[in-house]
Image (cartoon, rainbow, N blue to C red):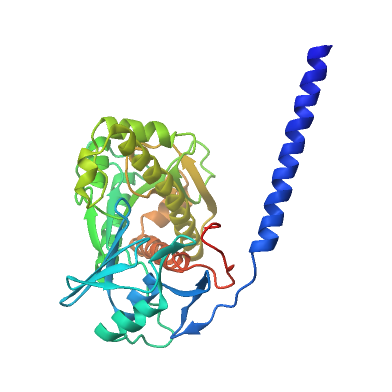
Length: 386
């Protein structure tokens, strides 16, 4: 009886603490958060942090046509265009311009997931070195351009995959679509690596190795479906199942000395724990990006093909589980369905599939660009909240 009473008191105490915590949190939010207008200059939003005007670096670089990259480990940003090289460090007010140290009035920062720089950085450095790149009205200027993609044509060689009633083989359909997609992406200036470009058998582990060694940004595996229920038809896109533990994959990758696509050599000498943490972050990020990529490709396929949209699903496919970059598996239709088999046998239909996948990549790239910039109606936060 006494134990029951103590348990009841402990439960009430925990409830009270939780209520006070939530109440305190919302009071703090009410006091500290305030709506802030976001002025625009040259179409670039400005954000007020502790009363200081900041601009998103990605938007500035696109405006000036500057190439840039960010090292997650060292928190270093490198900008380059022509003969000019600029190096910044997140959290520091010192920048190096063509090897010469320059001091900013405020440090480089990260706000709502994007790197931001004080307004003076634009006036004193970027405007002095670079002219703006003019973009035609209505033209989309990508903030995050996809540079390299891996296309994986499912099955091949002695592995025909699914087979339709007329004898149409999955391996032939996927290879043809992969080649068509390859041509479309190359015309857009995207480098493409194909796991197979002919009717050859490529083991699944080898496909994963290609994905992890090519330093590409995305992995697209193309397949065709089959089912005993021949009435089934439609397209679907898969990403790695959430049932697969990112932490377990991360530890296995760290123990196997797999390399992340990082330019920083310090990763080679990092501890097992640090490598596992970095891999865990990578797999977690890849899953989120794979879901978004699946969604945009699925939407594009539905809009370009006269077929049923099954939707986005998760699965434990080896080519998805083993890759260290965002990866999706696209099922372009059911060979077991006579009507869909006829469609998949037509070159024009395969071309529409390739174009739809390309459109999905473009939409994905556009959404990456948009999410790189904080929302316009953002809140004016202090350092503590961020």
